[in-house]
Structure formats: C-alpha cells, structure tokens
Length: 396
Image (tube, rainbow, N blue to C red):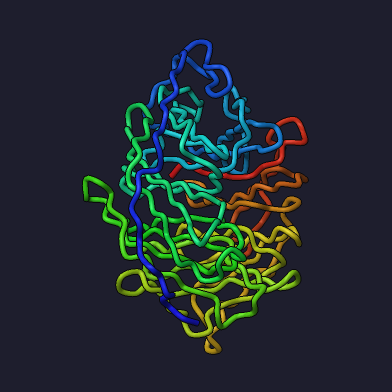
C-alpha cells in the first residue's frame, strides 16, 4: 500500500458566507435554536457526562456516568428542531457542538451536564456535515462534508469563541485529485491528532487523507495534504472510522473489506503526516466496522461493527505474526447496529450508541481478570423510541 497518494495540492478557501443565528434566551429562535435553560452559562462542567445525538427523534440526550450507572441529565433529551448528524465536546468541557447536515449549533455545558443555549452557531455555507472534531487546544473546530463530487473533499474550519461558542470561518480545504474519481464513497470521519499537528480524514473507498495543521498560526493554516490510497487492496475496501494514539504516532483505521469481512489496521504517522502500514498490523473484526476508539491507557482498541451488532476487542501491540491480538472474548454483543464509541472521562467505561436500539446506549466496564474484556454495566434508551442514535461524545 502506498503511504502517500498522488495529491494535486491544497486549495485554500473560506467556506462561504456564514450567517450567525440570533438567539432568544427564553424562547429560542424558530426553526433552529431551542431555549433549554436560560440560567446556564459556558462555565466548565465538573461532571462525567456522555451525550447522544438522536437522528430519528431530532434530540440530544445527556447522561451522567456514575459507578456502573447512567442517569439522565436534567432537561434531557433536548429538542433541536433539526436532525443531528455529529457531536463534539470542546476540551474545556464547556461547549457541546451539534451538527445537522447544513448547520452547527452550540450549547453551553453547565453543572451536571445541563445544556443551555448559546448565542452563536453556523446556519449557512454547510451542505452535508457527517463528522466533527476539535483541536486539542480548543481553538479550532473541523467539520467534514460527507459529499464527494468531482474529486473534491471539503473540510470546514472554524475558530471557536470559548465564551459564546461562536464559530468564525477560516480557510477550509478543497482537496482535488482524490484517486478513484466520482466512484469514491462519501467521506465519513475526521480526527485531529492529540499533538495538534495533523488532521486525518477517512475517505471510504478513497483511503485516507492526512493534512498538516498549524494550530499556533492565526489562520489555523492547513497544508501539504497526503492521500493514502487503497490501490493494493480489493476494490470493495472502505475506510470508515479513525482513532489516533496519545503520542500521535499511530493511526488506527476501522476498515471494511467486503460485505462479510471487516478489519482494524494500524499505520505509523511519519514525517509530514505520511501514513505507513505497521507491518501487517491488523485484526479481523465483525461486519461493517463503523467506529474505533482506544481505552484511556492506549493499550487496547475497540471496534463497533454495525452489521453484526458487536464490539471487537484488540491489544494495540502486534504479536510475533504482526497481528493485533484479540482480547477478552474477541467480540461482545452491543446494541443493534452500533454507530459510535466513546470513553468516559474517568477512563473506567466504554460507551456505545446503537442506531437500531436494544439498547440505544450501552456502557461497559473493563474486566478485572481478563485483559481487554468488556463487561456490561448499564444500558438505557435515549428517549422515547424510535430515537435513532447517530453520534456520541463524552466530556474529557
């Protein structure tokens, strides 16, 4: 597999004239903002909270993570007035960003995880937001456009006002020359490396993209994109989800090889963000892997498999054969059609959101006797079914 594709270059652009919605603190603005708690501020929460975006119910649900328990946040679920597609919590745990296909809303996170409306957001210039991530310094939000047309992938970039949740558009990335042309499956995931130096994008059948990023620059400059193509793999191969280890040296990719085979693959992050396969470092997952996350210690990696409704468990250390060894029972049952994974801020629990319900949100602890094995701790609905979870995010 090639570590660096035939990228034509990075075309800088401002992602359109973006309107900022006005907000009525007590009544909300019709069609976009919903007044949730007029007394809430943008001060950081001290709680251990997980949020789930419900695409069918058009709501966001919050839960306090306790010792083996999930307790609904006061006022949850919150009605949005639009169908959510992605979530992101800023590193200060003070703002929750909720994306719809063509907008991003900002909510303050108060004590106990209660959500309050903020005065800023993005209501224009977006077309198909499917994923978001925030730089580790909390200054920049990246939103990925899931549409793919004429060999162009769009990453929207915004500078974050930490007090108001305001998003100021910066230069986005229109990346041309993606191998595979218009046959490439829509982009699906975006991830900023913990050291803040790279932005990674999963391109489906187009492989993956790494973009150098300078968070210290006043413009949040992105440059020198590298595409890792899937030319050496079967044509049905798709890269669906991404995770980066804490020292920003390894990128983990949840990958579909066909309708019956999935895998987790590991790539070293080289100079300039060039991706190189860790020698044969991969493991077999369930069908249609849709999410991947590392545990807090970085020793284990977990993959949610949407079609088989399972979670696969692996060590991050390749064995003598170069494979990522399965841990615990190898796979465990999850809710139906899991679409997202998150680790709570205590590091004690893994949480899975499932689009098909049964249950909508499931929480697992790590087995005390079998390394990497997950044990069911709690499960709950995220509202009145059908809720249709589409994304999950936890406080840090």
